[in-house]
Image (cartoon, rainbow, N blue to C red; front, side, top):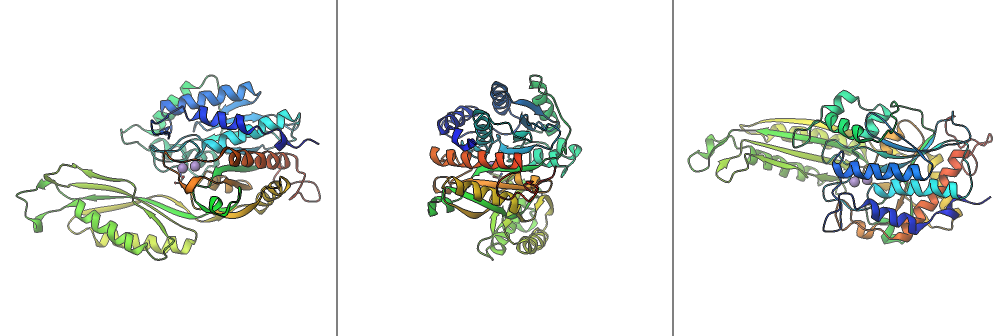
Length: 427
Ligand code: HGY
Ligand code: MN
Ligand code: MN
């Protein structure tokens, strides 16, 4: 039997990646295609048209997640899904998320080109708002799809302009050209997310395929420090309620606390000062905290430390800490990891286990079905940066592995299948 991977066309995949990067293109070669913006709406319409041209049926849902469905012999069976996201950071690269969606499309097109019809349907998916740069937190599309969050909570989240996510979603869904909507929480047989590593390990080791073992744990917060505006020249320092000085004390203390263990990832990426005027004592500061570590005990210990520091360093100001996301470390399904390793081996591709330091929608899908990820190298591990780059051959190799994995999962044969031929995923 022809292998789907034999029909993966790396040049076509590369061309489509470059085409998609036109939407929200930045002059420096990166992309700014933030969620639910006109750039993403246009990219979404392009994907729908491409899917239809390949005989795939487009669907969406109230979260504007986009699905392109390849029918199977058994339409009643839960689909195997593959994909990622098409939204980007404001200074994003051309491959984060986009590679996963287009590799899934390439894998499905290869299965069709091989003249094969899978037993289960296969659905290519682009989840909404993975990045969380416009509407925080991220991954709300996959949260809503899996039931991890309710629509009322997500719809109320506002961006920096004060636009509610619910309004932005309504605008995107209104722009859909007769793309039918489906309910959330539909059964899924398995989910596989291809992604660039966004780290240096695979490139450093010269290994083209990463079999992702899991995702490190994270807690994300917003801290609001409230003081009082005052004249920079007349207000006595001992009488000031300076929100900036309190926030700086907090960030410095949190940075020290997070230095142990040394592999803790702590980022304060957003820091807003109000009124942000040189001769006014800052009245308010809002800052973000993004805390990550593979060991949940470390994340939980630092959670307590951060809360104590915010309270302890506020001085005469008021301070509030809001945890906006908590995702413990997870380990992916051995069935999916086995299928990825076997497919890579079958293609003669060296591969290695690797933990994902970045977050992905696969985290949410892991809670509802057997889930795994395929990593490919990216140059110098750079990501969330316009200089993000991946080699066409590595991207094609990832798509070839995905094509064979999807074929196996959609038919219950090959490695990981039990005596009944079922690959260990629900019927
Ligand atoms: O932040 C993350 O880990 C993801 O890339 N949005
Ligand atoms: Mn991503
Ligand atoms: Mn990202």
